[in-house]
Length: 233
Image (cartoon, rainbow, N blue to C red; front, side, top):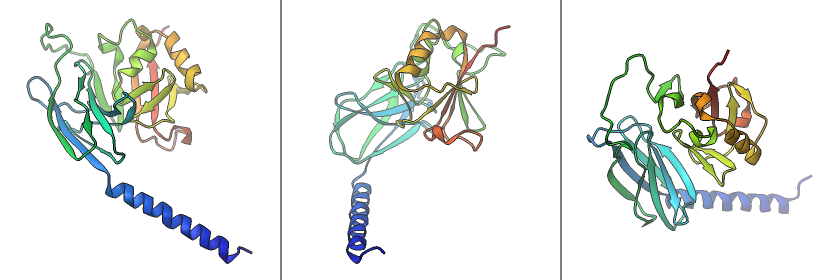
Protein backbone atom coordinates (compact mmCIF):
# COMPACT_ATOMS: atom_id res chain seq x y z
CA UNK A 1 0.00 0.00 0.00
CA UNK A 2 1.33 3.46 -0.95
CA UNK A 3 1.80 5.77 2.03
CA UNK A 4 0.19 9.26 2.13
CA UNK A 5 3.65 10.80 2.56
CA UNK A 6 4.87 9.21 -0.69
CA UNK A 7 1.78 10.49 -2.52
CA UNK A 8 2.41 14.02 -1.23
CA UNK A 9 6.02 13.88 -2.50
CA UNK A 10 4.87 12.71 -5.94
CA UNK A 11 2.21 15.45 -6.08
CA UNK A 12 4.73 18.14 -5.11
CA UNK A 13 7.11 16.89 -7.81
CA UNK A 14 4.37 17.05 -10.46
CA UNK A 15 3.46 20.59 -9.43
CA UNK A 16 7.11 21.68 -9.60
CA UNK A 17 7.60 20.17 -13.08
CA UNK A 18 4.34 21.72 -14.29
CA UNK A 19 5.43 25.10 -12.96
CA UNK A 20 8.80 24.84 -14.71
CA UNK A 21 7.11 23.92 -18.00
CA UNK A 22 4.64 26.81 -17.77
CA UNK A 23 7.43 29.22 -16.83
CA UNK A 24 9.49 28.06 -19.82
CA UNK A 25 6.56 28.50 -22.20
CA UNK A 26 5.83 32.01 -20.87
CA UNK A 27 9.48 33.05 -21.35
CA UNK A 28 9.91 31.61 -24.85
CA UNK A 29 11.18 34.18 -27.34
CA UNK A 30 10.36 34.25 -31.05
CA UNK A 31 12.89 34.86 -33.81
CA UNK A 32 11.20 35.51 -37.13
CA UNK A 33 12.12 36.66 -40.61
CA UNK A 34 11.81 36.02 -44.33
CA UNK A 35 14.36 34.55 -46.76
CA UNK A 36 14.46 35.74 -50.38
CA UNK A 37 16.75 35.40 -53.39
CA UNK A 38 18.53 38.19 -55.26
CA UNK A 39 15.30 38.93 -57.17
CA UNK A 40 13.42 39.31 -53.87
CA UNK A 41 11.45 36.12 -54.56
CA UNK A 42 10.75 34.00 -51.44
CA UNK A 43 12.90 30.89 -50.93
CA UNK A 44 10.98 27.91 -49.50
CA UNK A 45 12.73 25.05 -47.69
CA UNK A 46 15.79 27.11 -46.77
CA UNK A 47 17.37 25.85 -43.53
CA UNK A 48 17.34 28.38 -40.68
CA UNK A 49 19.30 27.44 -37.55
CA UNK A 50 19.87 29.09 -34.17
CA UNK A 51 23.40 28.88 -32.72
CA UNK A 52 24.90 30.06 -29.46
CA UNK A 53 27.94 32.36 -29.45
CA UNK A 54 30.24 29.27 -29.48
CA UNK A 55 28.60 28.14 -32.76
CA UNK A 56 26.78 25.25 -31.08
CA UNK A 57 23.56 24.33 -32.90
CA UNK A 58 20.51 24.92 -30.69
CA UNK A 59 17.61 24.21 -33.05
CA UNK A 60 16.67 24.65 -36.67
CA UNK A 61 13.67 24.89 -38.95
CA UNK A 62 12.84 25.38 -42.63
CA UNK A 63 11.20 28.32 -44.35
CA UNK A 64 7.62 27.86 -45.50
CA UNK A 65 6.20 28.29 -49.00
CA UNK A 66 6.52 32.10 -48.79
CA UNK A 67 10.04 32.06 -47.33
CA UNK A 68 9.07 32.86 -43.75
CA UNK A 69 10.47 31.19 -40.61
CA UNK A 70 9.73 31.18 -36.89
CA UNK A 71 12.15 29.92 -34.20
CA UNK A 72 11.08 29.65 -30.54
CA UNK A 73 13.53 29.30 -27.65
CA UNK A 74 13.52 30.27 -23.97
CA UNK A 75 17.06 30.15 -22.53
CA UNK A 76 18.68 33.54 -22.02
CA UNK A 77 22.01 34.15 -23.75
CA UNK A 78 23.64 35.45 -26.90
CA UNK A 79 22.84 33.79 -30.21
CA UNK A 80 23.01 34.20 -33.97
CA UNK A 81 21.09 32.79 -36.92
CA UNK A 82 22.46 30.93 -39.94
CA UNK A 83 20.53 30.47 -43.18
CA UNK A 84 21.55 27.97 -45.85
CA UNK A 85 20.01 26.89 -49.13
CA UNK A 86 21.28 24.69 -51.94
CA UNK A 87 23.02 26.77 -54.60
CA UNK A 88 23.20 29.94 -52.47
CA UNK A 89 25.81 31.45 -50.17
CA UNK A 90 25.15 30.96 -46.46
CA UNK A 91 23.89 33.92 -44.45
CA UNK A 92 24.91 34.60 -40.84
CA UNK A 93 23.35 37.28 -38.65
CA UNK A 94 25.08 39.38 -36.03
CA UNK A 95 25.09 38.07 -32.44
CA UNK A 96 22.05 39.20 -30.45
CA UNK A 97 20.56 38.80 -26.98
CA UNK A 98 17.63 36.37 -26.90
CA UNK A 99 14.55 38.57 -27.21
CA UNK A 100 11.53 38.64 -29.49
CA UNK A 101 13.20 39.77 -32.68
CA UNK A 102 12.22 40.09 -36.33
CA UNK A 103 15.32 39.80 -38.52
CA UNK A 104 13.36 41.19 -41.44
CA UNK A 105 14.11 40.15 -45.02
CA UNK A 106 17.30 38.11 -45.47
CA UNK A 107 18.65 38.01 -49.02
CA UNK A 108 20.71 35.01 -50.19
CA UNK A 109 23.11 35.41 -53.10
CA UNK A 110 23.88 32.60 -55.56
CA UNK A 111 27.17 30.73 -55.22
CA UNK A 112 28.03 31.20 -58.88
CA UNK A 113 27.16 34.70 -60.03
CA UNK A 114 28.60 33.90 -63.46
CA UNK A 115 26.04 31.22 -64.20
CA UNK A 116 22.78 32.57 -65.57
CA UNK A 117 19.50 30.82 -64.95
CA UNK A 118 18.81 28.12 -67.51
CA UNK A 119 16.04 25.62 -68.14
CA UNK A 120 17.08 22.02 -68.76
CA UNK A 121 14.25 19.85 -69.99
CA UNK A 122 13.84 16.41 -68.48
CA UNK A 123 15.95 17.26 -65.44
CA UNK A 124 14.62 17.05 -61.89
CA UNK A 125 14.67 20.01 -59.53
CA UNK A 126 17.36 20.05 -56.86
CA UNK A 127 14.77 19.89 -54.06
CA UNK A 128 11.34 18.30 -54.44
CA UNK A 129 8.52 17.45 -52.05
CA UNK A 130 6.50 14.31 -52.80
CA UNK A 131 3.86 12.88 -50.43
CA UNK A 132 5.45 14.50 -47.38
CA UNK A 133 8.97 13.37 -48.33
CA UNK A 134 11.61 16.01 -49.11
CA UNK A 135 13.89 14.78 -51.91
CA UNK A 136 17.34 16.35 -52.35
CA UNK A 137 18.57 15.31 -55.82
CA UNK A 138 22.33 15.19 -55.25
CA UNK A 139 23.15 14.16 -58.83
CA UNK A 140 21.77 17.51 -60.05
CA UNK A 141 24.07 19.66 -57.89
CA UNK A 142 27.57 20.81 -58.75
CA UNK A 143 28.58 21.03 -55.07
CA UNK A 144 27.42 17.48 -54.40
CA UNK A 145 29.97 15.86 -56.73
CA UNK A 146 33.43 14.49 -55.91
CA UNK A 147 32.92 14.64 -52.15
CA UNK A 148 32.04 12.02 -49.54
CA UNK A 149 28.44 11.01 -48.90
CA UNK A 150 28.77 12.61 -45.45
CA UNK A 151 29.69 15.98 -47.01
CA UNK A 152 26.76 15.71 -49.43
CA UNK A 153 24.46 14.85 -46.52
CA UNK A 154 25.53 18.01 -44.68
CA UNK A 155 24.13 20.07 -47.58
CA UNK A 156 20.68 18.49 -47.43
CA UNK A 157 17.93 20.76 -46.03
CA UNK A 158 17.58 20.51 -42.25
CA UNK A 159 20.48 18.06 -41.80
CA UNK A 160 23.38 18.87 -39.48
CA UNK A 161 26.42 16.81 -38.45
CA UNK A 162 27.84 17.79 -35.06
CA UNK A 163 31.38 16.82 -34.05
CA UNK A 164 31.57 14.57 -37.13
CA UNK A 165 29.54 11.92 -35.29
CA UNK A 166 26.01 13.07 -34.37
CA UNK A 167 23.58 13.46 -37.28
CA UNK A 168 20.56 15.61 -36.44
CA UNK A 169 17.47 16.59 -38.42
CA UNK A 170 15.95 20.01 -37.72
CA UNK A 171 17.89 20.13 -34.46
CA UNK A 172 16.69 16.71 -33.25
CA UNK A 173 18.89 13.66 -32.72
CA UNK A 174 17.75 10.03 -33.03
CA UNK A 175 17.55 10.07 -36.82
CA UNK A 176 17.30 6.70 -38.58
CA UNK A 177 19.69 6.42 -41.55
CA UNK A 178 18.80 4.06 -44.40
CA UNK A 179 20.85 3.06 -47.44
CA UNK A 180 18.56 2.31 -50.37
CA UNK A 181 15.74 1.69 -47.91
CA UNK A 182 17.72 -0.69 -45.71
CA UNK A 183 18.89 -0.10 -42.15
CA UNK A 184 22.61 0.34 -41.59
CA UNK A 185 22.49 -0.81 -37.92
CA UNK A 186 25.27 1.71 -37.25
CA UNK A 187 25.28 4.93 -35.25
CA UNK A 188 27.62 7.66 -34.08
CA UNK A 189 31.16 7.66 -35.41
CA UNK A 190 30.80 4.20 -37.00
CA UNK A 191 28.00 5.54 -39.20
CA UNK A 192 29.81 8.76 -40.15
CA UNK A 193 33.00 6.81 -40.93
CA UNK A 194 30.97 4.64 -43.32
CA UNK A 195 29.46 7.69 -45.02
CA UNK A 196 32.93 9.28 -45.31
CA UNK A 197 34.17 6.18 -47.14
CA UNK A 198 31.43 6.40 -49.80
CA UNK A 199 31.65 8.71 -52.81
CA UNK A 200 28.86 11.13 -53.64
CA UNK A 201 29.44 10.40 -57.34
CA UNK A 202 27.37 7.24 -56.82
CA UNK A 203 24.55 9.14 -55.10
CA UNK A 204 21.18 9.66 -56.72
CA UNK A 205 19.22 11.44 -54.00
CA UNK A 206 18.69 11.90 -50.26
CA UNK A 207 15.13 11.45 -49.04
CA UNK A 208 14.14 13.20 -45.81
CA UNK A 209 11.00 12.03 -43.99
CA UNK A 210 10.21 14.31 -41.05
CA UNK A 211 7.10 12.38 -39.98
CA UNK A 212 7.71 8.64 -40.53
CA UNK A 213 4.70 6.44 -41.25
CA UNK A 214 3.86 3.18 -39.50
CA UNK A 215 5.95 1.13 -41.94
CA UNK A 216 9.12 2.53 -40.34
CA UNK A 217 10.30 1.42 -36.92
CA UNK A 218 10.07 3.73 -33.91
CA UNK A 219 13.86 4.13 -33.85
CA UNK A 220 13.55 7.03 -36.27
CA UNK A 221 11.50 9.22 -33.94
CA UNK A 222 13.27 12.39 -35.11
CA UNK A 223 12.85 11.44 -38.76
CA UNK A 224 14.17 9.17 -41.51
CA UNK A 225 17.01 9.89 -43.93
CA UNK A 226 17.12 7.47 -46.86
CA UNK A 227 20.31 7.69 -48.94
CA UNK A 228 19.59 6.41 -52.44
CA UNK A 229 22.42 5.35 -54.73
CA UNK A 230 22.51 4.99 -58.49
CA UNK A 231 21.65 1.52 -59.70
CA UNK A 232 24.69 -0.05 -61.37
CA UNK A 233 24.30 -3.16 -63.46
